[in-house]
Length: 307
Image (tube, rainbow, N blue to C red; front, side):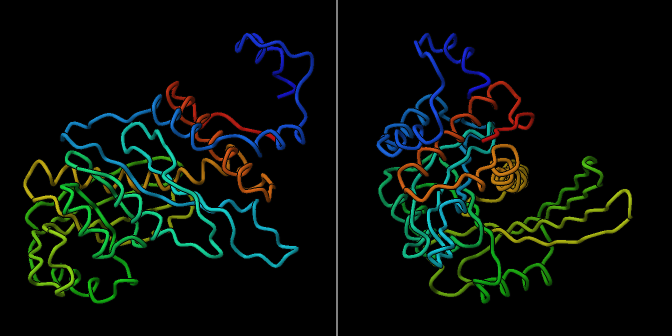
């Protein structure tokens, strides 16, 4: 800020004889209304409807490691939960919680409970949120979900693996990308899924489709190959159009998850030390605002934020 002080004065048309100190900035942030700030962020960076007619958003949580006071023996503290658009990667916060005593699952469920009709809205989740309670709610409000299945839902995982083993996919896709010193090959397989074949508690979720993605990554220098399988369930009906859209949605969800790395690598978020909850939230929102602005200009990955 000190280096760019004169430029900031010119850009904002404000009068300031000297740059604010970091300690002063933290005190101001302690009284800042982060909820109003988030509303402004959402208003100016609203996402757009994609070609398939759905507004795809990824739900992703992140711990603010700089808020953990290790001297007090803390292992968890302030966490953020973001909603990030698949297309533009614009983000907003849907909530904050204290990881030592609160749950991301509860926060996300309460958020969706407070929304009205979700028609035209689609959401992708990691396996943490793949539960019948949340998926029931989204289905009931006419929204679309794409949720990953892992070992935290062991019985469901075994059921979808059984489908993969004994049934033929209705649609399949192949993709290959080269970059970052590796070659990545992805295969997508899509199966119609009848909820009656699953445990009773999944009956009201409206599950219709299973998406299986196989990824093979080969390091160009070493030749090392890694293999990964990922399973997703969705209440979107399977046809040729939706099949292509779902494969892209899985890919975009993974891209959104890398946003946390951008926040830490480019903006040093994990190195921002601060134990005041309001200050931490305002700083996190400031990073999101900066990311949204930079992505509008297509330069989010080329900037470094130094404290």
